[in-house]
Image (cartoon, rainbow, N blue to C red; front, side, top):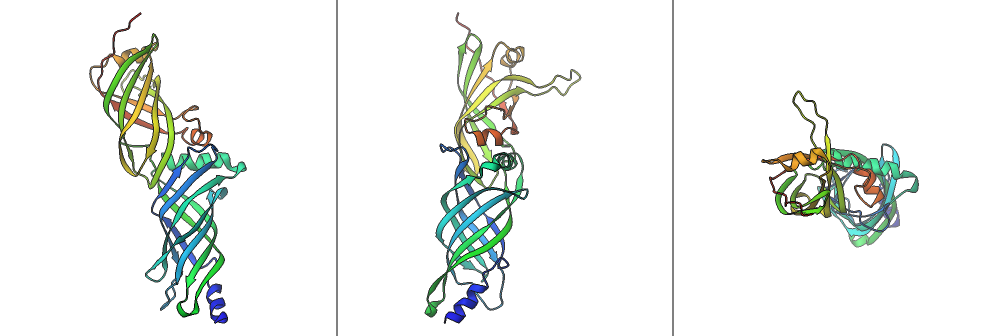
Length: 303
């Protein structure tokens, strides 16, 4: 029996795991350590080498994963044992239990690039490498654990694509916050086309009037900021997200914007103070999207 088990174990080398896919990835970036995130996935699929007439007897999997961006190690995570099942003899489905991914101290800028790619692109390909401990069920020969099965694979996930189709569905309140500003509270529907579920906390974006496309050739003009409050995004359309826009009424562009008699489109951009979380702030610096703001009236100024 020992000879058979050892022979089976010898098959689990780096050549056995051919490819890894994730159907979803949850990331919580609101913890106290800006360079540690809580991650999980409901469905991980590992495609193994196919052996005619043989079904891999995998029962549980524990993973140690290093994420690579452009060939550089970004961070690592360790998922505890989770149940696994085998489909078609050579595809193992499992999950990543809730665990902490820690960014390496020397990889902060690379992690920022990783977040930026997932945020601004329709999809992003990176690499995962590491090792797995695998529990196999050999029936009458018993249950055995194979330690340290190495793997490396490219992995592609759909990204946020700069949050397309952002909609302002309702203006709930407009107040003059000071002699120099107007605060507009609104509800946004945020479309998340990615495979990611994200917990980001408060995000603050700069609000700009788009550049003119006529002969005046007017550049983009700064209006103020908008805060997306306690932002949590599931896959698909996320309705009723609270947004608080603060516009600077000392600016001529803002004064003209507030006189609009029809809905107007504004540009929302990440900038140096988008988040109190340093990792999010660095990663969302290149975010750029647009939203149409419905017509609203501004209360008269009371001196």
